Length: 303
Ligand code: RIB
Ligand code: CA
Image (tube, rainbow, N blue to C red; front, top):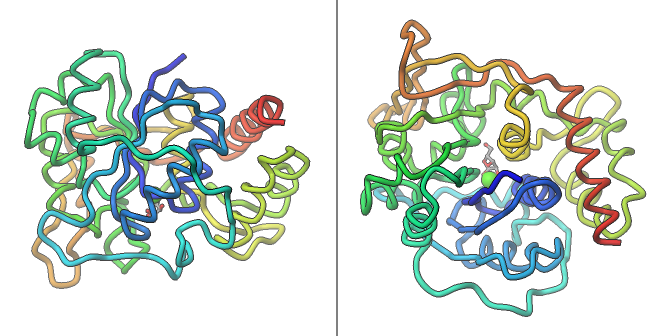
Protein backbone atom coordinates (compact mmCIF):
# COMPACT_ATOMS: atom_id res chain seq x y z
CA UNK A 1 0.00 0.00 0.00
CA UNK A 2 1.38 3.43 -0.92
CA UNK A 3 2.64 5.31 2.12
CA UNK A 4 1.76 9.00 2.22
CA UNK A 5 2.27 12.07 4.39
CA UNK A 6 -0.50 14.61 3.80
CA UNK A 7 -0.02 18.33 4.46
CA UNK A 8 -3.40 20.02 4.44
CA UNK A 9 -5.68 22.89 5.47
CA UNK A 10 -9.09 21.21 6.09
CA UNK A 11 -11.08 22.55 4.35
CA UNK A 12 -14.00 20.77 2.76
CA UNK A 13 -12.14 19.29 -0.19
CA UNK A 14 -9.23 18.43 2.10
CA UNK A 15 -11.70 16.39 4.17
CA UNK A 16 -12.96 14.53 1.10
CA UNK A 17 -9.34 13.94 0.07
CA UNK A 18 -8.45 12.58 3.52
CA UNK A 19 -11.42 10.20 3.31
CA UNK A 20 -10.14 8.96 -0.05
CA UNK A 21 -6.66 8.50 1.37
CA UNK A 22 -8.03 6.72 4.46
CA UNK A 23 -9.62 4.15 2.18
CA UNK A 24 -6.67 2.94 0.15
CA UNK A 25 -3.44 4.59 1.28
CA UNK A 26 -1.23 4.14 4.31
CA UNK A 27 -1.26 7.57 5.94
CA UNK A 28 1.92 7.85 7.99
CA UNK A 29 1.16 11.37 9.12
CA UNK A 30 -0.97 14.45 8.68
CA UNK A 31 0.44 17.95 9.01
CA UNK A 32 -1.66 21.08 9.08
CA UNK A 33 -1.15 24.61 7.84
CA UNK A 34 -3.13 27.81 8.04
CA UNK A 35 -5.01 28.23 4.78
CA UNK A 36 -8.73 27.96 4.16
CA UNK A 37 -9.19 28.87 7.81
CA UNK A 38 -6.83 29.56 10.71
CA UNK A 39 -4.34 26.93 11.83
CA UNK A 40 -6.26 26.29 15.05
CA UNK A 41 -9.30 25.30 12.96
CA UNK A 42 -7.47 23.33 10.25
CA UNK A 43 -5.79 21.38 13.03
CA UNK A 44 -9.01 20.83 14.98
CA UNK A 45 -10.65 19.63 11.75
CA UNK A 46 -7.76 17.27 11.00
CA UNK A 47 -7.95 15.84 14.52
CA UNK A 48 -11.70 15.35 14.25
CA UNK A 49 -11.32 13.74 10.81
CA UNK A 50 -8.61 11.40 12.14
CA UNK A 51 -11.10 9.98 14.62
CA UNK A 52 -14.13 10.10 12.31
CA UNK A 53 -12.18 8.19 9.64
CA UNK A 54 -10.81 5.70 12.18
CA UNK A 55 -7.20 6.60 11.41
CA UNK A 56 -6.05 5.39 14.80
CA UNK A 57 -2.78 6.86 16.01
CA UNK A 58 -1.72 8.56 12.79
CA UNK A 59 0.11 11.65 14.09
CA UNK A 60 -1.39 15.07 13.37
CA UNK A 61 1.24 17.80 13.66
CA UNK A 62 0.46 21.50 13.23
CA UNK A 63 2.78 23.78 11.35
CA UNK A 64 2.77 27.30 10.02
CA UNK A 65 -0.09 29.59 10.96
CA UNK A 66 0.58 31.91 8.05
CA UNK A 67 2.74 32.60 5.04
CA UNK A 68 6.48 33.14 5.09
CA UNK A 69 6.25 36.79 4.10
CA UNK A 70 2.66 37.68 3.22
CA UNK A 71 -0.37 38.83 5.10
CA UNK A 72 -2.89 36.11 5.73
CA UNK A 73 -5.32 34.99 3.03
CA UNK A 74 -8.29 32.86 4.11
CA UNK A 75 -11.38 31.36 2.42
CA UNK A 76 -14.20 31.17 4.99
CA UNK A 77 -16.57 32.33 2.26
CA UNK A 78 -15.88 29.01 0.56
CA UNK A 79 -15.35 26.58 3.45
CA UNK A 80 -17.42 28.24 6.17
CA UNK A 81 -16.25 29.74 9.45
CA UNK A 82 -15.22 26.35 10.87
CA UNK A 83 -13.60 25.17 7.63
CA UNK A 84 -15.99 22.23 7.19
CA UNK A 85 -19.07 24.12 6.05
CA UNK A 86 -22.04 23.08 8.16
CA UNK A 87 -20.66 19.62 8.89
CA UNK A 88 -20.30 19.06 12.62
CA UNK A 89 -18.05 16.12 13.47
CA UNK A 90 -17.65 14.76 16.97
CA UNK A 91 -14.86 16.83 18.53
CA UNK A 92 -11.55 15.03 18.72
CA UNK A 93 -10.62 13.34 21.97
CA UNK A 94 -6.92 12.98 21.27
CA UNK A 95 -4.63 16.00 20.88
CA UNK A 96 -2.21 16.98 18.17
CA UNK A 97 1.43 15.94 18.37
CA UNK A 98 4.04 18.23 19.79
CA UNK A 99 6.62 19.85 17.54
CA UNK A 100 6.34 21.58 14.17
CA UNK A 101 5.04 20.10 10.93
CA UNK A 102 8.23 20.97 9.07
CA UNK A 103 10.32 18.91 11.49
CA UNK A 104 7.80 16.05 11.31
CA UNK A 105 8.07 16.08 7.51
CA UNK A 106 11.90 16.02 7.70
CA UNK A 107 12.07 13.30 10.36
CA UNK A 108 9.44 11.09 8.68
CA UNK A 109 11.04 11.27 5.23
CA UNK A 110 14.54 10.82 6.67
CA UNK A 111 13.46 7.65 8.48
CA UNK A 112 12.12 6.05 5.29
CA UNK A 113 14.07 7.48 2.36
CA UNK A 114 12.43 6.82 -1.00
CA UNK A 115 9.33 5.25 0.53
CA UNK A 116 6.91 8.05 1.36
CA UNK A 117 4.90 10.21 -1.05
CA UNK A 118 4.38 13.75 0.20
CA UNK A 119 0.96 15.12 -0.76
CA UNK A 120 0.48 18.85 -0.18
CA UNK A 121 -3.07 20.13 -0.56
CA UNK A 122 -2.85 23.52 1.15
CA UNK A 123 -0.48 26.48 1.06
CA UNK A 124 3.10 25.19 0.76
CA UNK A 125 4.54 26.95 3.81
CA UNK A 126 5.28 23.76 5.80
CA UNK A 127 6.89 22.07 2.81
CA UNK A 128 9.02 25.14 2.11
CA UNK A 129 10.13 25.31 5.74
CA UNK A 130 11.09 21.63 5.60
CA UNK A 131 13.15 22.24 2.46
CA UNK A 132 14.84 25.27 4.02
CA UNK A 133 15.67 23.38 7.21
CA UNK A 134 16.78 20.18 5.46
CA UNK A 135 17.29 20.35 1.66
CA UNK A 136 17.79 16.58 1.51
CA UNK A 137 14.04 16.07 1.88
CA UNK A 138 13.85 16.39 -1.90
CA UNK A 139 15.96 13.22 -2.16
CA UNK A 140 14.16 11.40 0.67
CA UNK A 141 10.62 11.96 -0.62
CA UNK A 142 9.46 9.20 -2.98
CA UNK A 143 7.38 11.81 -4.80
CA UNK A 144 5.87 15.26 -4.19
CA UNK A 145 2.29 15.74 -5.35
CA UNK A 146 0.54 19.07 -4.88
CA UNK A 147 -2.92 20.39 -5.46
CA UNK A 148 -2.07 23.89 -6.56
CA UNK A 149 -1.43 26.28 -9.38
CA UNK A 150 -2.71 26.35 -12.91
CA UNK A 151 -1.35 26.98 -16.39
CA UNK A 152 -4.56 28.61 -17.57
CA UNK A 153 -6.33 30.66 -14.86
CA UNK A 154 -6.75 31.45 -11.20
CA UNK A 155 -9.60 30.94 -8.80
CA UNK A 156 -8.97 33.28 -5.88
CA UNK A 157 -8.16 35.96 -8.46
CA UNK A 158 -7.80 35.92 -12.26
CA UNK A 159 -4.15 34.86 -12.17
CA UNK A 160 -3.55 32.71 -9.08
CA UNK A 161 -4.87 29.54 -7.48
CA UNK A 162 -5.51 29.81 -3.74
CA UNK A 163 -2.81 27.48 -2.36
CA UNK A 164 -0.09 29.26 -4.34
CA UNK A 165 -1.54 32.74 -3.81
CA UNK A 166 -1.64 32.18 -0.04
CA UNK A 167 2.15 31.82 0.05
CA UNK A 168 3.90 32.52 -3.28
CA UNK A 169 7.37 32.64 -1.72
CA UNK A 170 6.87 29.20 -0.19
CA UNK A 171 5.65 27.84 -3.52
CA UNK A 172 8.66 29.30 -5.30
CA UNK A 173 11.01 27.63 -2.81
CA UNK A 174 9.21 24.30 -3.29
CA UNK A 175 9.25 24.43 -7.09
CA UNK A 176 12.96 25.35 -7.09
CA UNK A 177 14.05 22.79 -4.47
CA UNK A 178 15.34 20.23 -6.97
CA UNK A 179 12.56 17.63 -7.05
CA UNK A 180 9.87 17.04 -9.65
CA UNK A 181 6.65 18.68 -8.50
CA UNK A 182 3.64 16.68 -9.66
CA UNK A 183 1.25 19.58 -10.06
CA UNK A 184 -2.50 18.91 -9.99
CA UNK A 185 -3.65 22.38 -10.92
CA UNK A 186 -7.02 23.94 -11.57
CA UNK A 187 -6.69 22.82 -15.21
CA UNK A 188 -7.64 19.31 -14.07
CA UNK A 189 -9.24 19.84 -10.66
CA UNK A 190 -11.94 22.12 -12.09
CA UNK A 191 -13.19 19.11 -14.06
CA UNK A 192 -13.63 16.99 -10.89
CA UNK A 193 -17.16 18.23 -10.24
CA UNK A 194 -19.68 16.83 -7.77
CA UNK A 195 -22.69 16.68 -10.06
CA UNK A 196 -26.07 15.44 -8.83
CA UNK A 197 -25.23 12.01 -10.25
CA UNK A 198 -21.96 11.94 -8.28
CA UNK A 199 -23.71 13.20 -5.16
CA UNK A 200 -26.23 10.34 -5.40
CA UNK A 201 -23.29 7.91 -5.48
CA UNK A 202 -22.08 9.44 -2.19
CA UNK A 203 -25.34 8.58 -0.47
CA UNK A 204 -26.10 5.33 1.34
CA UNK A 205 -22.53 4.94 2.61
CA UNK A 206 -23.41 4.84 6.28
CA UNK A 207 -21.86 7.49 8.50
CA UNK A 208 -19.35 8.39 5.78
CA UNK A 209 -22.26 9.90 3.86
CA UNK A 210 -22.90 12.15 6.88
CA UNK A 211 -19.60 13.83 5.95
CA UNK A 212 -19.53 13.52 2.17
CA UNK A 213 -23.02 14.68 1.26
CA UNK A 214 -23.42 17.81 3.42
CA UNK A 215 -19.82 18.80 2.78
CA UNK A 216 -20.29 18.62 -0.98
CA UNK A 217 -23.64 20.40 -0.77
CA UNK A 218 -22.10 23.26 1.21
CA UNK A 219 -19.12 23.49 -1.15
CA UNK A 220 -21.22 24.58 -4.14
CA UNK A 221 -24.43 24.40 -6.11
CA UNK A 222 -24.95 20.88 -7.44
CA UNK A 223 -26.84 20.11 -10.65
CA UNK A 224 -27.07 17.48 -13.34
CA UNK A 225 -24.17 18.98 -15.27
CA UNK A 226 -22.23 21.02 -12.74
CA UNK A 227 -21.14 21.27 -9.13
CA UNK A 228 -18.26 22.04 -6.78
CA UNK A 229 -14.79 20.84 -7.73
CA UNK A 230 -13.16 18.64 -5.08
CA UNK A 231 -9.69 19.91 -5.94
CA UNK A 232 -7.66 18.14 -3.25
CA UNK A 233 -9.10 14.70 -3.97
CA UNK A 234 -7.43 14.82 -7.39
CA UNK A 235 -4.00 14.94 -5.73
CA UNK A 236 -4.82 11.88 -3.62
CA UNK A 237 -6.36 10.07 -6.60
CA UNK A 238 -3.14 10.72 -8.53
CA UNK A 239 -1.19 8.99 -5.76
CA UNK A 240 -3.56 6.04 -6.11
CA UNK A 241 -3.46 5.91 -9.92
CA UNK A 242 -1.30 8.37 -11.88
CA UNK A 243 -2.82 7.11 -15.15
CA UNK A 244 -5.94 9.08 -14.25
CA UNK A 245 -4.23 12.20 -15.58
CA UNK A 246 -2.19 13.16 -18.58
CA UNK A 247 0.95 14.93 -17.35
CA UNK A 248 3.42 17.02 -19.35
CA UNK A 249 6.93 18.04 -18.28
CA UNK A 250 7.34 21.77 -17.82
CA UNK A 251 9.28 24.50 -16.11
CA UNK A 252 7.11 26.25 -13.51
CA UNK A 253 8.08 29.59 -12.03
CA UNK A 254 5.99 31.25 -9.33
CA UNK A 255 5.35 34.96 -9.75
CA UNK A 256 6.08 36.75 -6.47
CA UNK A 257 6.22 40.39 -7.58
CA UNK A 258 3.34 41.07 -9.95
CA UNK A 259 0.79 43.59 -8.83
CA UNK A 260 -1.95 41.55 -10.52
CA UNK A 261 -0.17 38.22 -11.05
CA UNK A 262 1.44 37.37 -7.72
CA UNK A 263 0.92 33.66 -7.04
CA UNK A 264 0.63 32.78 -10.72
CA UNK A 265 2.34 29.52 -11.73
CA UNK A 266 4.02 30.58 -14.96
CA UNK A 267 4.23 27.29 -16.87
CA UNK A 268 6.67 26.77 -19.74
CA UNK A 269 5.88 23.63 -21.76
CA UNK A 270 8.66 24.43 -24.21
CA UNK A 271 11.19 22.61 -22.04
CA UNK A 272 11.61 18.83 -22.29
CA UNK A 273 12.79 18.46 -18.68
CA UNK A 274 11.79 21.04 -16.11
CA UNK A 275 10.92 21.08 -12.41
CA UNK A 276 7.37 19.82 -12.75
CA UNK A 277 5.07 17.22 -14.23
CA UNK A 278 1.96 19.27 -14.93
CA UNK A 279 -1.41 17.54 -15.16
CA UNK A 280 -3.27 18.66 -18.25
CA UNK A 281 -6.26 16.29 -18.54
CA UNK A 282 -8.19 14.23 -15.96
CA UNK A 283 -10.09 11.11 -16.94
CA UNK A 284 -13.19 12.24 -15.09
CA UNK A 285 -15.18 9.03 -15.38
CA UNK A 286 -12.32 6.88 -14.12
CA UNK A 287 -11.64 9.45 -11.38
CA UNK A 288 -15.15 9.22 -9.98
CA UNK A 289 -15.25 5.43 -10.33
CA UNK A 290 -12.04 5.25 -8.27
CA UNK A 291 -13.23 7.79 -5.68
CA UNK A 292 -16.68 6.29 -5.17
CA UNK A 293 -15.28 2.76 -5.11
CA UNK A 294 -12.82 3.81 -2.42
CA UNK A 295 -15.55 5.54 -0.41
CA UNK A 296 -17.66 2.38 -0.61
CA UNK A 297 -14.76 0.31 0.73
CA UNK A 298 -14.16 2.79 3.54
CA UNK A 299 -17.86 2.86 4.40
CA UNK A 300 -17.83 -0.91 4.83
CA UNK A 301 -15.02 -0.48 7.38
CA UNK A 302 -16.59 2.45 9.19
CA UNK A 303 -20.14 1.11 9.33
O1 RIB B 1 -7.73 26.24 -4.92
C1 RIB B 1 -8.17 25.08 -4.28
C2 RIB B 1 -7.34 24.81 -3.07
O2 RIB B 1 -7.49 25.88 -2.16
C3 RIB B 1 -7.79 23.56 -2.30
O3 RIB B 1 -6.69 23.00 -1.66
C4 RIB B 1 -8.76 24.12 -1.29
O4 RIB B 1 -8.81 23.31 -0.10
C5 RIB B 1 -8.11 25.44 -0.98
O5 RIB B 1 -7.12 25.20 0.00
CA1 CA C 1 -6.78 22.42 0.71
